[in-house]
Length: 210
Image (tube, rainbow, N blue to C red; front, side, top):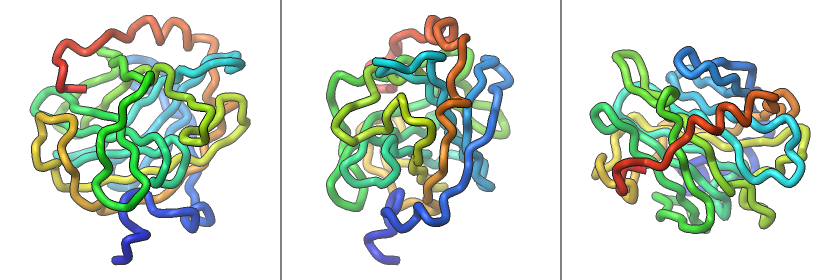
């Protein structure tokens, strides 16, 4: 496999991009525009009804098994704000990542934060789900999508192999076993209930868990 196909791939995957559809989380009741992969991976976004000047949105990401799930908030892997998450027993571990090369991306730091929504974050016998407010995540430097856009393309990647240190949010991750991009309708992702959903978020209790 060529290096250019590692983790999220490149611009070429735009040609075969999949399409997100409406999805409502059974436990939280939050409605997303979400892409669902045949492996059980899924990625969803929800935005406020009026996105003008907004830098926050709600993300749900998950999958099956003990491997990791990832998302690129700008489509490609390189030079984009990435989110990685995976299950660790009954909790979810997650971090922001950013890299200018292909391979396991290092942790990214900035003003952006993840505030978990407890009733949308869980593990069970069939899958795991992590839902959070991505606060100050929409950047103006091209590393993320633009909130006012009608549509955007987000990248996804996943691996069935667990990170080397499951309890460490900065753990290196293995090469993906599937990757691609999906088109999201941001108009349909907007909701008048966003402000209510956002109030459900809270800072994580364990420092290295998220």
